[in-house]
Image (cartoon, rainbow, N blue to C red; front, top):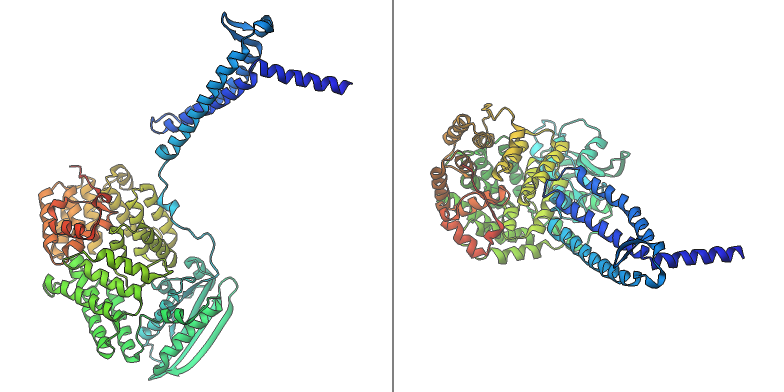
Length: 624
């Protein structure tokens, strides 16, 4: 009986709550309160409201909730005003009409809440940083490997070029397999000749396995040892010693690469084997001349002694004479000509710009006709068209490159200006994938991080750019060159306050002698108002360079020397390969159009031919 009485009382209480519209008031108040909180959240940042404002609103809404319920229970709104519920006879009560009005209020408030949520989601939501959008690898893949430089064990220690070349060919072969994460040469070779624990190297490079080995060469006789090591415990998963001669070099190289891939559970069929070894030569003598050229090629870049590339080209020519179908040698040969067009001040002017640009075109077209890798074949052709006087074919060849890539998500070694061209053509997804993969497989490469910063700046993501610099510190340390490059990008994007924070005492002429440091510091000094230092550095650059390039153009703009800047743009635009040079600069500055296109009629014509959407480029408004 007692239970029935309690149940009846509860039932009567709920009925009374409904009659007095307490439940509807609670519903209406909850929706209205949530709506108010959402509106405050949306407007807080645009109106620069204090941080405590939204917290205060939430507290007030919460306090008001029980008060509203008490009022709804104790009082009734009648035509004669607010009266206590106990003083209103049930027959005279108008709670039913009030309830209907509350229904309208609830529906209206709910509709408004949905509208506010949609506005917040699509109009006021902060743009996701490119750092958040790009793929990240949180754990080290078991299908990851770094091939360290094979040690030269020859008696006279004069076969470094050979052992390094063998290492690189094995590395490049493995890199053709999409399943494998293979550390690039730049990062792997940072550990050459260093006695560092395998586990530390693997952790630095973000890989689970290390390949190391040695080469002993006496005449044509070879002894090559190789071992695949699991980094976490130092266990040798595979090892082999090959006693052979140079004639069988490719068989040894192939066997090592295939054994490593198989041990790491990569399935190899005939198509994949062909891809692994498609870009090289099967002529041993040609291969050796190519390796000698590559030793000089890398030394020239490492020491910023670009004139050494002409010496490297002599070996590439020898390789091509021995194997006319060695397309990769022709791609490397092109680099010496390109520096004359794109990097004034880094090499001696040994020929006319017409001849240099012709050297670029001929080298790339020759390579395109002979390369076997379909992606690299079309990339060579794409780059040749990029430096030609007509860009109509760029979109068509770009699609052929994508077909040639197949299941690969990054460009093959030797792709040259792939990132720049694909960026201009709007292929952001592939570009982002390529650059992020490059950072993962080449974390000790400055260029990888510079490209990564360019991606962040392209998205207008200043915070993301600074995050890139912080990420890079884990691999490169506090790299002054990367810092200066990031600050230049911020300056081009007119983030003066951010740049000033890094130079509280201004930019000084600290005596840097390499062409890029001179230019970076010249721009930063000009941008932050130190005209004396900027002019000193600009004159220093002019004494080394044959013409004003894009980096010095932005310095002239920052100094307010607009007419000189415009004249420099007109000159570059008129040069053979000039439109390509300007386009590379646009991408390097994060897709920023740092000059007036009317000063570059040839580039404008090339953009139209390729169907490049100029509206995707952000125009820099120089504040002078």
